[in-house]
Image (cartoon, rainbow, N blue to C red; front, side, top):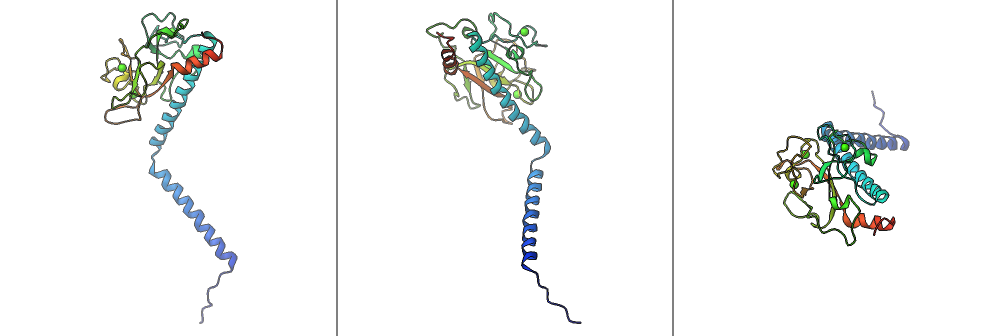
Length: 225
Ligand SMILES: [Ca+2]
Ligand SMILES: [Ca+2]
Ligand SMILES: [Ca+2]
């Protein structure tokens, strides 16, 4: 028996190449999906979502300041079950929970933990002209290099991250040993912003409100001087 020579039409050859390209694309997508486990993807998504929540919180603080001429005090009445309302006057308490009800925001970060809020008390009352003296608040990275000038932050907001703890110098004593995201005691003015790290353990996210940004908005809104 004589075999017929195999010959493909031009259309058949083109179709085969397209099929191969599609198959390789699907394979690449599948491999990419398998390389990052679901738990890692959820973690990354929550980290990104928390960053957005923090940025929204900073915008809400600016909106509050434009309406009221000053920043809100922290939510401090009952640290175990915060009610989300700012507790004025701040008195000596400069760090508490973000007053999410006062700001019209959601309660928590993407891990369902409340957000911490530190504010310069001089910016929670009628803001003086000239501006109040520097409060000494400082944001550093994990290598203790300054991220902000000590004269800059009027307020700091941070998420305790997946582990629910204020890590490194985001806690009161700087030892990363606070049992939960409530930071009892008298936290110093130094805070940490950095990418997540295993050693030292660090998964917090932090943003600060620059005095210059705040004053720019207040002047534009006719709220200062
Ligand atoms: Ca309250
Ligand atoms: Ca943490
Ligand atoms: Ca600290």
